[in-house]
Image (cartoon, rainbow, N blue to C red; front, side, top):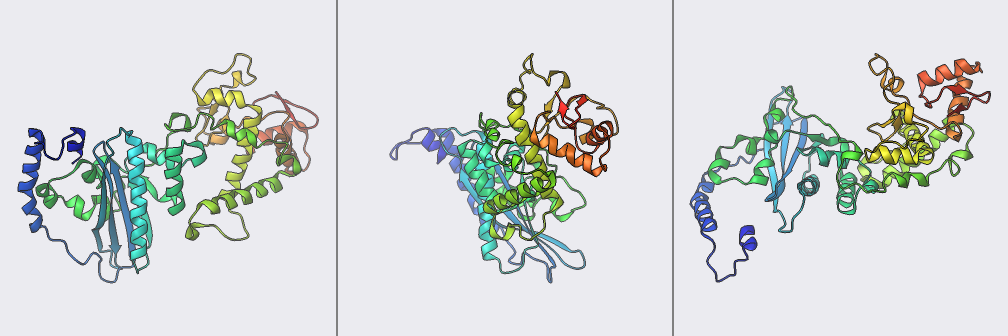
Length: 399
């Protein structure tokens, strides 16, 4: 049907011979569908593990998703069965393949959401699979940093299910690949992966998933002004209201939890009166990112666009780079050592920043008011590095 539209064939015109041949071939294959038998029982008896595994894929022809139910009983007997699938023809208007892959991912979440409404049994876990690294990277990015088309769909997916459940899978192990490229009934009849899922679902001892995310500067559909938006949060607004870094860190952590809960579905929201270590870490990174965006905006902009730093930049000798969390770090320092990543590539902080002063005062207090050299050494080991080599009497590092 799509090819008929592409050739602009009217209702009373004869279709081109290649399309007619393709249709006749399909027509001859259709009776084979009557020989396909689908078992009604899709679970093992007395299953104690019930999981949904949904795959998504896209091509320039079509995109779709398929869901499987994986059940395991107490003896370890495992069963994987196809539950349902959904496919859509790709639009005639040219759309990039990553966008089609994202549409397939959204279709996968909608399909799974419908399954969750239909099931009466308790689902142990839900997993999603895609062979698109770009889509996985989009899903692990704040929608505000992405262009409208991608941002809307990413936000929709993030609201419905946990992003941690998404995994990368090779194309040859992606069951939804059969949807995106199409299949004749004769092939479908013998296709074990379509009916019973990829082999690794039945044999979890052979993992084939591997999540590798692309850095923001290599992702398509990213707003050009994404990094400049961070400048809105400046030291003089929220940060300077606090004279203690631990208190500031906890305040930002609560703000981020509130923000996250507004974007999550009800069953995924985080409640409680205690902050987790992960939440405190994300808050600290947010504080550092905002501080760097204010004081090193030009350097971050150049690094984001893979351009050399200005010849007059104070960070030029530090070989700075942006890590996977988009934080500015010192590069090329004891890179071959066995130290931790934070110690090999410390953060870059300004000498006159309020956050810098709070961090050094915090370290100074933890060391029971040690001298300047001891405070600086501990600060560099335990937290980061300001990319400088002088420490004033007020424990502020000079650029």
